[in-house]
Length: 159
Length: 377
Ligand code: SF4
Ligand code: SF4
Image (cartoon, rainbow over all chains, first blue to last red; front, side, top):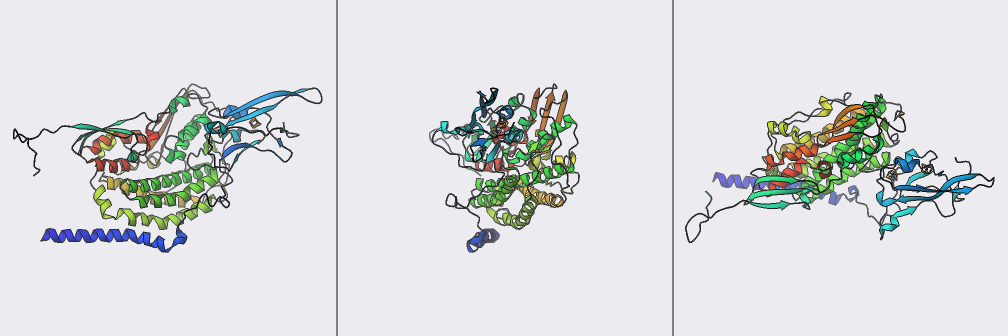
């Protein structure tokens, strides 16, 4: 007899705790405003990442297609995993002097660990992190990017 | 009395035999690539032998090539749920070698972010623990609240998980103007939501039956296996580095070290829930008193540590994390050793799981809160 009473009590207490848990579910069903699910990718238009977000490294260009990278290779040296390759060339200046400028700023997105050290090391603030996070591509080779735009040149006055 | 099956022809009891099965490396409840070799008799576990090496990246060896600034970002990839604390440990060890005085502002910010990281780690653990027991709901609730913390990190340092926010000598950037507001909003929000966790899981009868008395670890065993963190504290082993060897701003705050005596899965669960309350109280004490000042002291571009040995330990969400640097005076360490909490905690698994059923092993492993890349670095 005792065992049966105990058994019934345990069933009741089990049901009580289950109902207690279900009460929370019920609360959220009746309060849809408190649910925080985001409908990605439907909300692409309104989805804004924080300014600090480390999406990928980009070389900033102004309207005249000029960038600020002097080709000093500080970022290349500081990068822990060889993500950045600076390929520079020598060009002849109008006054006859030879000057070293970047030919290609190669960035291997597939190797980047988003540590932000390159951004900190750049003396001219030429590179920054973009807020783009949709990195998926169909072919791995597309992840190797040349960051300086074709025909771009060094901004006046940056040394 | 169990009936023993007999051989029909001879009438003798049937022979039973131990057998082996592999659990993992791709088993969902191992939360990563951990392979356990189980010796079983029926469903009773006789022996558990963890096999490591599936996610070995030789981080310690890589550190011997990297500069001290670069080492920090590698520690993100060990215990990724406590990345800030790991970063802090390396930074503190390097700062110890450089003998620089760290501004109070840095100390306080580091402490607040450490506690936020601990909260987010425990929230994730809580969600995943529920899921290991078959309660998917808790997973969603844990992640809902964790998202708020992750957003605070993202706004201040740009990364969500592998933060790399510490540099030797301070922080990478100053905190975002919204940091204090966001953190306070989170604490207010989470104080309301944490009781929901109890209501959903802690008081549930099925949950209690599955965790109470399962995987008991005695205090003596906890000490001899070096089990630290919430797992050790649930067995009554007082090991909180924040209390015993305070670093950063832990000297300024008032908090309790959560201890329990039972040493079973339920105790480990309760310790973590209680720790979330303590973390929130630490954050509340500091968030309004962030001192003004620099967020970083100037260090040389190429950091060279004087010849010698440096050791720094911190309390991560899983226990004692130590960094041991031997420097020969160069720009990278001669040898670097990490003492990761997960590795020692895992060593006690065999002792805890002996005699338990396979389903209990999942519970025990989950309450150890293992992060495999931390064990296998
Ligand atoms: S973020 Fe880090 S890994 Fe990526 S390119 Fe910069 S330095 Fe290299
Ligand atoms: S991006 Fe900056 S650090 Fe890198 S090569 Fe150009 S100027 Fe130097």
